[in-house]
Image (cartoon, rainbow, N blue to C red; front, top):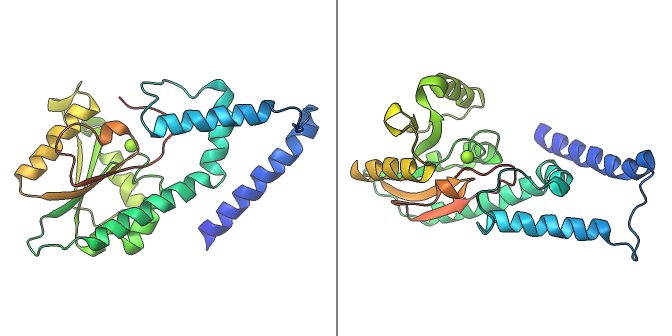
Amino acid sequence: MISEMMERLQEVLIFLFLAIFPKATGFKPCTKDSTSIDVGSAYCLSWRLGVEANNVRAWRTVPAQCFRYVETYMIGGQYDRDIGLIVEQILSYANQIYLSDDGMDAWILDVDDTCISNLLYYRGKRYGLVQRGFKVFLLTGRDQETLGQATLDNLQYQGFIGYERLILRTAAYKGQSAVTYKSQIRKQLEEEGYRVWGNVGDQWSDLQGEYLGNRTFKLPNPMYFVP
Ligand SMILES: [Mg+2]
């Protein structure tokens, strides 16, 4: 209830901002004859689609003309709706899987912008993969030595419990790309005997390489790119 109220409040604030902005700045809104905003938004939509489809790669910053577009996308409700749709697909797929009783059916979730600060956690808590009987492995490129305890605390603070194992980057994997590092970890899990049914991440580098699992799910992230 509170999260719905907050989401509604965010939408109202954004609406008010968009309504007030032209008056405060003297900026004249577009008319049918002036399509500069429409063209700009259209470009940013194309850019975001290109990012999510992995056609735009190795980008370092959001294009300057798309700052406001990305901000509105992230906090204006569309990001939450996109996440919600993907979570529905994840759970629909997960519910179709016949689990063995050996406890070796597994999922892999990325951490930043997948588990942490994401609706996946809130929904997963109620209807999630753990309750369905999957062993959930959290796989992150965060450094174990410097961020291990903080990551555990953060997950605990957000109420993300019940997962099988949190896997952080140890010294042996320092300097490796995310694709190389995560592929090796997934290989180890398969060698332990786990059947990885799903692999979820907000970066393509979470979902590329080897031992990807039976199906991958890409969450949106137009804010940064991890190679
Ligand atoms: Mg991530």
